[in-house]
Amino acid sequence: MTENDLAANARALYLKAKHAMDIGNHGYVIQLMQSVLKEAPGFLDGRKLLRAAALNQAKGKRGGFSIAGTTLGLTSGGALKKDPLTAMDLAEKMLATDPTNSQANMLLFEAANKANLPHVASFALETLVGANPRDTKLLHQLGNHYQAVGDNEKAVAVFTRITQINPSDLEANKKSKDASASATMKKGKWEEVSKSGGSLNFRDLMKSKDEAIALETKSKVVRTAEQITQQISDVYPQWEADQNVVDLSRRLASLYEQLHEAITANNGSEADADESLDNAIWYYDHTNNILRGGDPSIARKLADLQLRKMERRIKLLEAWIAQVPDPSHPEVAPFVEELAQLKQQRGVTVLETAKRRVADNPTDLQHRYELGEALMQAGAYTEAIPELQRALQNPNVRLRAMNLLGQCFVVKGMNDLAVNTFKKAVSEILTMDNVKKEILYRLGLVFEKLGKRDEYLACMKEIYEADYGYLDVARRVEESYKE
Image (cartoon, rainbow, N blue to C red; front, side, top):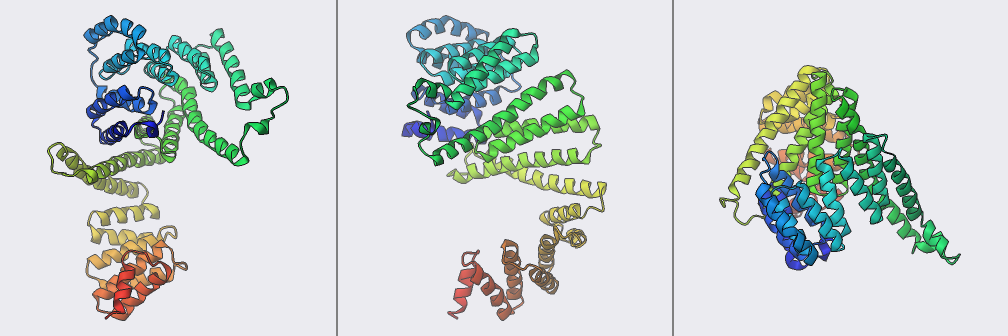
């Protein structure tokens, strides 16, 4: 079941829950998704969203669940026999406050199996394994379940993981080989073809060449994320054995960064994207601490990812607040305040990082450009000018530096210098790309300010001839013909 299969009311609640998750209102997510799952118990993405909210809400809290656990034990047995869906609801009530509770997850697993919802059952065991990654008994149970429902590739990964934890586990080694063989047969459709008695061939199994290509492309995308996750699983036990090995820490940091990029590129869940980014930051920070800041590339990567996390949060808050009818409402005000603080913090962080990089490597002209840009954004135009002037010597940032330098001159009222800078930049750009359009537009505005109407219109018309829809150029040009 997907989001599109939900009834209109349930889908509306789910979308509200996603927005609430984006801004960190985890309690509201739980409230909404419990209602949705009563109506659509097989909606796995919704259940994942609910669990992610519960996990986030439970961070830092002690699990006082003895009374609830006792109640669950007294009531779940009968519910499981009579109505597995009711048993699933009971399990979710417990998991809302204690998402990794073993008893509740096992109840969800058993109830989902009885309700013929194998993917939900898988999710329950996966949650337990996530909380107990080296529990081979749980891993065996998960691997057996994957085999039972035909997820042989996942079974191979689980049994392989067991052999890494315990190389002497012969049962896991055998099951890994069995599951691998089953996965190969299923993937290749050998069994289906062999049973057809010659009436089928491999081409008959595909409706068209285009469909085959589309399916292969999709599977590659999925496998890429899964392969990264598997690599993380392979490296983690080695890192856990000695957490001060630089190469292993750096490797985990890089893998989590790649996982974040894969999830983001393929429109994965925000919760998964945030979690992978948090993990990347943690491992880069750990690596940086081991090296005592001795590797500039690691320190830079750490700063970049921390800024990316801040940018993601700002973007989510801006999008959510834009949809709120009354931003001054008491329940919205804390998020508005958080957004303002994050924007201020972003400016400070960018500027401090740029200054530190220039101090560490004063001859790097890329760093000079970044510092000039940060100073300009902070309103320190006078301080930005010499940094941008030095950056002009770097061909990779020269045109961007000239654009910013011209803007600094405009703010300081040095319009003649701004004209000279913008004109020089325009002359160095051969094609009418977005950079040239922007600089031409700014040059035109300076000419307008200076009362040079012909030069102003010449700039606007040059853009108009190439891109009618650029900003308000069309209005400016067309109105000039009416005067």
